[in-house]
Length: 152
Length: 245
Image (cartoon, rainbow over all chains, first blue to last red; front, side):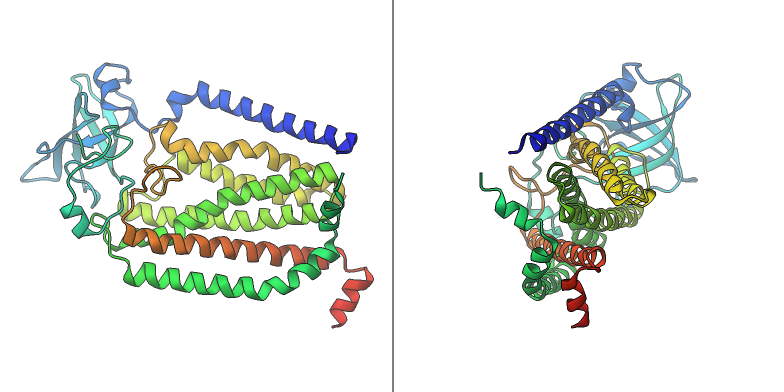
């Protein structure tokens, strides 16, 4: 390779490597802020601020959904497999919201540790299967709430 | 050292004449794959157990998002080759990749939003995956804008190539964002290593669509680059002869 071209190649590698390091350090410094939501563990441990708008995410605990008979109020618990957090919400839930499915709720945490949600989003997992397969398949998957909720 | 072949590849005329024969066949393969993939995906693949039919947007969303990422490397590498070897053709490839990549990224964002509304309950959320994808869109637009900001073509090419190279850090971030941070967007369904978490009856049409989009991308790139060649070489004798027919 011609020396001038080799020099240009090194300059390019320098630009790419050092700009990447800069951006990755930035992302590393902001890692907590880049997370869209708090896992229930952190909220229960008191690491989340009380009374400010935050998001929490986890799997809806099976058998925990309780709907009010005279309003749109609904109570449920979300979990990351370690601890669970009580959530209360008034409004219409998305179609994919169900027990044993992942959800991301946004709202405020009150002083007694109940999460008052103003918005509830359903989080879809990465599994795609036809209904027959879903029925036939026994539950299997990882416990991390970023992935499927099957084991929780 | 035998770098002659490389410099010959850099000749716009050689490139134009060489690719003329490929265009028809590439277009044919693209159309066949896209028709087969679309009909298979929309009409014959079973519906999803949770999402019903709305999951079928995956057959557009995943291929366009794939190529928006892969196309960024095409653009950045073409820019690097342009800077190192000062090859005009390489910059033409870079400019074509910027336009096509911007369109693909926009389609991926749009189809994602359309799918997000019925599935998640929202059009848009500022999570790591979606935000970094929006940054990718702005990077593509930035390269296009920077290209137009200079009167001098040589400076414009160099400046936009450097922007393209700096932006490459965003690609692994987009790809790994769903694993590194908590996001609303689900982790990858198709995996390079390990078993994919999509049923085989849905995976086949998806793979057909992905290969169809790869061919479409190749065809669009060649077509755009050839148009760039004709435009920038319009004063040469061979292009004049070509235009006369």
